[in-house]
Every structure is written in structure tokens, then in C-alpha cells.
Amino acid sequence: MLRDSELISQCRNGSDDAMEWLVQKHSGKLFDFILGKVKDRHQAEDIFQDVMIRLIVLIRNGHYTDNGKFTHWARHIAFNMCIDHFRRKKRSRYATNGDGHEFFDTFHFSSEGIDLKLITTERRDLIAKTLSLLPEDQRRVIVMRHYGECSFREIASVTNCSVNTALGRMRYGLMNMRKMIGGKAVG
Image (cartoon, rainbow, N blue to C red; front, side, top):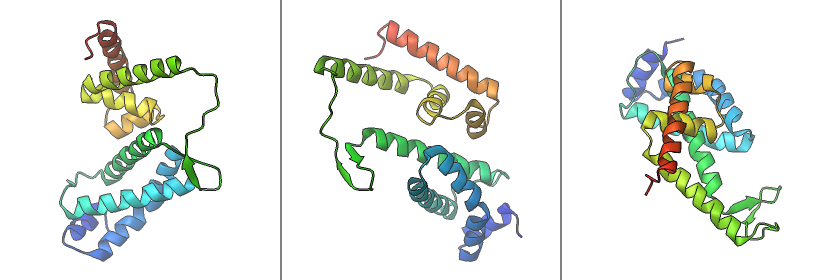
């Protein structure tokens, strides 16, 4: 079996066989990684297909620099696409009724009043705005931990840093958000 670097080199030169070998070599672990994040086989299959297409396009367009870490790079792309999936899911106005059919999520039966809904929406918007003002490394750790429900070990692996560095970025990110919200520097 050829090494990843050799397969990638052949892929860049247009070899469909090399691309197929590369995909087969990594598809099992990559699918398991995605399934572990989304916890739904059908959604994992959809995301997996999108990830494979993205990987192929990026490799063919020369956007992968071979540094011996193809698996790490592929997992990074898969992780980002899982986060995108969760973001779309949270924004979606659709819900499923259990048998796969979608319907508008227009009927909510709860005691939550309009004032509480407004406060919740305002808080969510304030947090999103504050999060967008953080440095990229701090924002990424918070998003991966909160929205992606990743462990610090997973975060460290994906961001290519130590667990302690990931913990520090989380700590400083949260401290910065508290300062911005407390000082009303968000606007």
C-alpha cells in the first residue's frame, strides 16, 4: 500500500485510482469520527459524503500541503463540517416527527412568556456578538467545547496544541467575554 503522501501526489496529478485508495484507506475512521460527533447514522452519512467531496476538491486544487498529517487534516475538515451541521440545526425552523418527515416547528406548548423569550434571544445574540469579537484561537476552543461538545483532548488534537493550551484558551476566552459583557464593550 502506498503512503498518503504518494497517493496525494498522484491525486493532484488527476489519478482517480489514487483518490479511491486514499478514500478507502481513511473512510472507516473518518466516518466513525463523524458518527461520534453527530450521534445519528443518517446525518453522519450525509456529512461524511460532504467531507469526502470537500477533501477531494481541496486536494485536487492543491490546498493540502503534505506534512505527514493527512489524517489530522481530514479530521479537522470533518470536525468543522460537524460544527456547521450543528449550527444549521440550531438555526433550522424545521423539526422531524420521528419518521423522517419534516414539519414547521410553529406550535410550542410551554408556559414561557414572550418577555422570557425576548430576554433569551437577547442573551443569545449578546453571546454570539461577544464570541465573534474574541481572538480566533479562543473563539474556536469555546465553539468546539460548547457547540461541538468536544473534550479538551479532542480540541487539542484538532487545533494541534496541548491540552493545557486548549484549557488556557478556554479560560482566557471566557474571561474576555465576561469583561466585554460586564463592561458593555459589545455593540
